[in-house]
Image 1 (cartoon, rainbow, N blue to C red):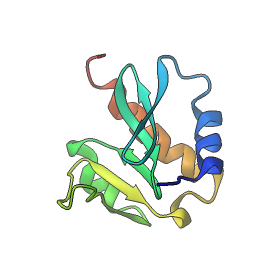
Image 2: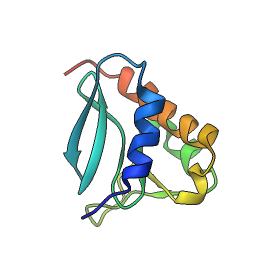
Image 3: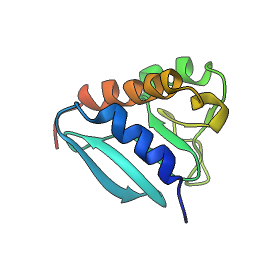
Image 4: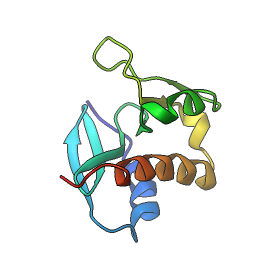
Length: 108
């Protein structure tokens, strides 16, 4: 599956100064890990791991939808349609939500 290289570059620019960021191919796209924990990524759209405690708030945001990659809803993970990250500030906000969740977990 192809993924949006332009979106990947935009995320790289946002994460450039965040320590312990690595990239890993998964979910048919490219994922960004913080200290070994998934923060966000690009598959056919933006994927953000917000955590179960932040799931409802994330789902209330425009253009967010349930991540159902496995065929079942994955609580704590959201897809964000392109309209939800057109502006750099919108993308930065989503990326920060993923980074915050990843940082809340023990390093791997």
